[in-house]
Image (cartoon, rainbow, N blue to C red; front, side, top):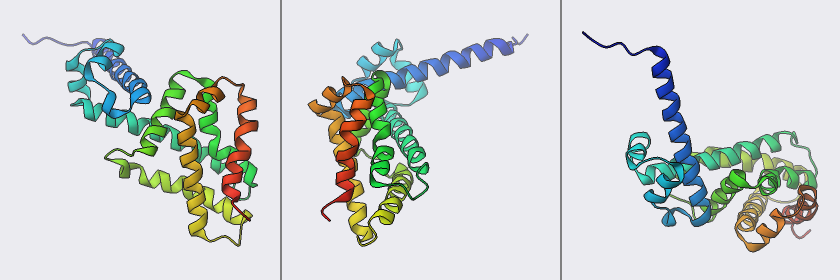
Length: 211
């Protein structure tokens, strides 16, 4: 006589599995933010997530695959937020407005702390030292860069596109460094309004360049 699994039990198992998967991703993300991919161990992730090694194998296949998914998740969250901010400019914002839109996801993460800050630090680490698989998100990077360059071109019509792309990449690199450097921790202790007042002119200056 075959046993019948009730639908509600199946749903509970699925929910429990999803919680375990989410907990593993959160634990991996936190450790990645602290140390980078080379400093993360399977034991620490499973201990922090309250899971076992078999759960990692079941949901991801390996430690590397788990870290790859966590990194991709962090990058997608960041890029989606940045693209949404840039979309509000409709291509005709000022340099100061562009700097605010470009840096706002990072500024908000600094103000929020916790997991949001862990995400942004992971983004910063992989931005400085890209992992294998970086090309999977090349389209989103290009989308954000293209939106920023469009606003820059409207403000700086005499500047070549190559130069504008370079300035956007420099601004992104500066934000990555800021998230990881001691000054980033100092900014995180400031009110959000103060962070914006301090950071937006610096990013706008990077966009402006020497005129």
